[in-house]
Image 1 (cartoon, rainbow, N blue to C red):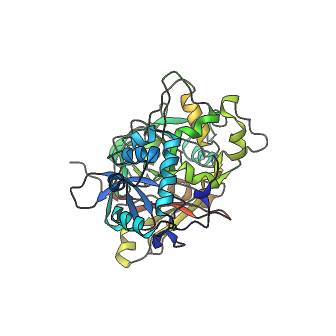
Image 2 (image 1 turned 180 degrees about the vertical axis):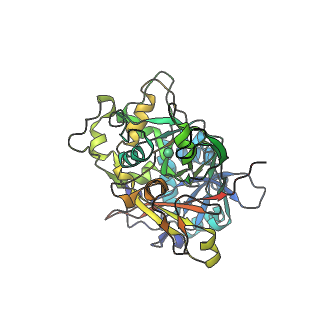
Image 3 (image 1 turned 90 degrees about the vertical axis):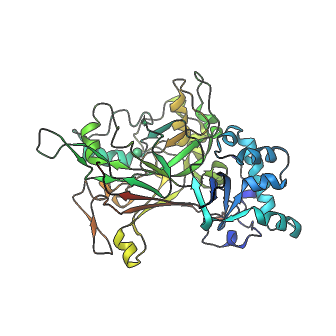
Length: 440
Ligand code: CA
């Protein structure tokens, strides 16, 4: 993917809040979501984050300021889901990005600015919906550090599964319980078995956890029976968001063998409202490497681009806000910080592997990257790793400790990219709150 003038660090917007050094949404970012004004009967429609505002793509389409392919793309974004826009492909995505960049860049004349101001809605007034109608959701497992940590804690033999270094493994997740940031998650009930006991019992999850992941939205799918080669996989991916794969560890450890995750995972998944496009992420690509002695990828999982630019340098962090944080006005406590660059498999390899058997992906399908844990213990993307299976509780500035999540806890995920010579762009935030279990 080529860099162009929309990645120029010097580019500024006439919208002042887009030029502030602390905004995740400068002109170089332009992430897509679906929104309406909160508390109104308005229809949900596409929007793009810029500074502290949302560019209302429904209003923009009506204002008639777009032309050609960008106008067609803008019309597709005026809908309550972005699936149609995703399916138009990279040329249309780029045409709209370039048009928005020109309209909101500092060179727009005053008449243009006056026409565009009514197309802005403050983010503080916005309510978000899922950006697409997600047909299918697949959750991968592509961090070798996470896999090693989990194997040591949950697998009877403590070993990395023998297939891990040969293919990006995954399971099919559930769409119905995916929600957008602000989602309230009821603590699940399930079967779990106490240490030393021979029979399970039913009860509320006692080891509720989060998993820090990136969500990967498929833009253009493939015909059933035809595969997506790894070398062209990038053209099929629209963009990335933050993803919290809520996980009930006690339910998971009892149910997962032999068929894998089921009720421990399918009760909730939370996404950030904004999808950062692959186009915006282009400057933050990085070489993808394999440790000496690890098997090289099979040919269908390898291309020159895989090695040269397959990784993405995305910084990520998880913070926790308990009821006591809120009560005492203490900001959320950071639990860990890591980077997507450490992932053992690339996004292109996930897409290529998903379709190697002819499985058809569709516009709006969602892939989870799998928990993103880095090489050091402090870079773990889940509590079960950070607390070593709950044996090393984390002290909080409220005087509390946490081994696993408690009722009222809010999990906050953030992500951003920065590189010398380029703008700092962010994903914004994903928040999800734990509600007390309810049986009747
Ligand atoms: Ca996961």
